Image 1 (tube, rainbow, N blue to C red):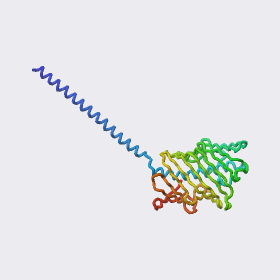
Image 2 (cartoon, rainbow, N blue to C red):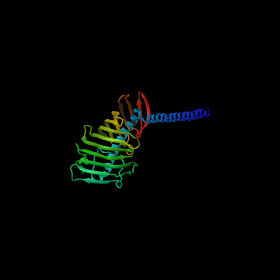
Image 3 (spheres, rainbow, N blue to C red):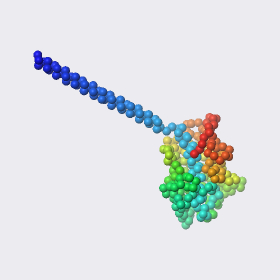
Image 4 (cartoon, helix red, strand yellow):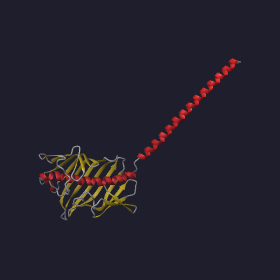
Length: 299
């Protein structure tokens, strides 16, 4: 009888221990599953927060439209300032201000080739007198160094090799063609650019195609044409000039449009407009969506 009681007690003890282990394992697995569920939910939420929307893309595309125009102007001023002491001159090129610091870059010219080649190398970068940061390499090709660029039909090409202007990096090429004097007695020509542009302050990047017809009227540069951008999400945005864009020649006005209207079209979304004002030299503009105008400041 005592032996049976001992056996029963032993069996009971083992059963209790096994049940405790079973419950402990179940609780452990449940805790792990609970932690994994929280982690998965948090990860999903984080991914959703990082998702870039088309609205973000449209806003950035408008910025890259303006930064592309600023870059083109700044490149012309740099080239003009760097090469004009050697006789290089072109009426179409922007000359206001002097953003070029000759101590900041190495300028080398191969005038024996045709077209001649000028290389402006900013290396790892430095600040210009106007406060802008420039790095990388800019290569200029023109049929002639002395006097040739202002001749009708002259085409000058600019090659960007990791060219950085402030927080924008550009690789690609830009072509400026002087068509001479038109029937109104004004200098006119064409701009064409194909480039890959990256923002150094955000994950945005763009393939950019630009075409402008240019006419210089009373020192005002007037542009008609378009810029098309395709961003890193594959979203295409077209900026088409509806009313002539105007840039002034005076220092401080050469990097902004003071007049003009641009239609912005993004695939799958309603068109909207950017109104650059009526002649005032500033970075203010109006964004017009569905008939509603909203003031914006362009960087």
